[in-house]
Image (cartoon, rainbow, N blue to C red; front, side, top):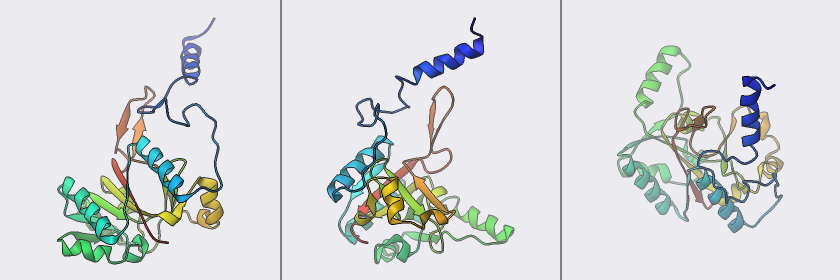
Amino acid sequence: METSRENFLNKIKNSLHHSLLPQANAEHPGSFQGYRFQADAPTDKLIEDFTRELETLSGHVHVLEDAEEIAGKILEILESHQASQIIAWDDASIGVTGLREALTKTGITIKEDELSIDNAGRKTRLSEMDEVLVGLTGAHGGLADTGAVALISGPGRGRLASLLPPVHIALLPKSRLYPSLPAFLSAHSTATDNSNLVFIAGPSRTADIEMTLSMGVHGPGEVHVIIVPGR
């Protein structure tokens, strides 16, 4: 005779064969298929797949061609949140020449994401950043099969920009789109040597055992990836 515990676990086990995660789409190509990855694919296909995957995860993808369009889209996102400040990586790490200058000319205040090493200075700096609603970063790669972006933090590329503000904007060059994680790791053989490598797949989300989904609890609740030209 089954105990109540065994009955409960069996219900979970049986439901896994036909259940979907919250907000999942039963028509999605990967819903009931085993994981398969590609080693290569045309850029247009990578963009199409990446866009589908990230939008499935409630993220937003914008494909833009020049600095003026990119700055305009960032300003549009800022205005939608009535924001006039951002935390940003440095120019070289963002990868779009003159973007920070273009944003400051419109009155946007850019805060650096470096923290003091002493506790008092750290608390003061975090307090100053607490009201900033938008973070701006570059990206070291995008995975077309999952919609995830790879970020490696370091000098000029602090983690706060992608973790602290409720809105994260990542600029991803087309040349850094990869079909899959194995393809990314093949092109970046030393990436895993860095303890600050992270993959961000859409807005932060968490769910309890009853699959009640909450967004933005442990990080940004809104993620935009702007696919740009460049290296």
